[in-house]
Length: 283
Image (tube, rainbow, N blue to C red; front, side, top):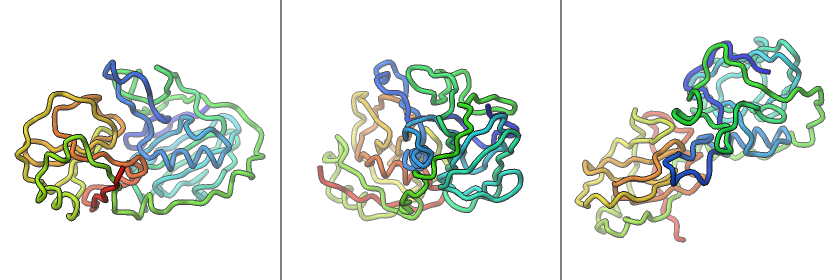
């Protein structure tokens, strides 16, 4: 098992989310950056969608009470094992009593810790993802215990060599498709939307990322309609809101764009003040 000595900031257990429950108002949830979380699992030989620990901006401190193997991916939070620096994106052997900690944030926003065999926290509605109102708690707390599969096998080197995609951290372009209300925008609005850079505001979370720059909006609110992670909404004030993994299931603001799945991963590693630009794709 893993004992949480310090939880870090907004740390939680997440897998790839809940599906088939949106008609009941239950969000998808799940890891913000599926690429990085899936990579950690794949390196360990796990299925990519197994539950991992997700940390935001500041990592925690975790003590292992059994032997296992871990992999740390995503944001570089200076991971250490028993005070010694360890590599990311490679399997790391853990023995009983080892302590995993994190330090200075060097790159990205969200970091992932996968464990051989996955985390065995409670599964609700076919997912282990934490979400307030669905699970008992929405974040990890000090002294929490996370059950894992005990393993003395370290024979996973065959999965250690995986090509990394640096664009998750380095790409400032978000690939998008037209949203249902995109064609209601004027040509000038469409041009402004696709030719300008936008800044991530301080209002960013697992639910949504708000952008600083506004787009003049004369559109009427729409009848409440389905929304998804990656939906870009245009508010009456002209502010753009990009919905993320914990977003609501319906909304009444015009849906002008829809992010490609890989672009949600890119955005999940952006921080306040970072610039992004939309790149429109054809269906």
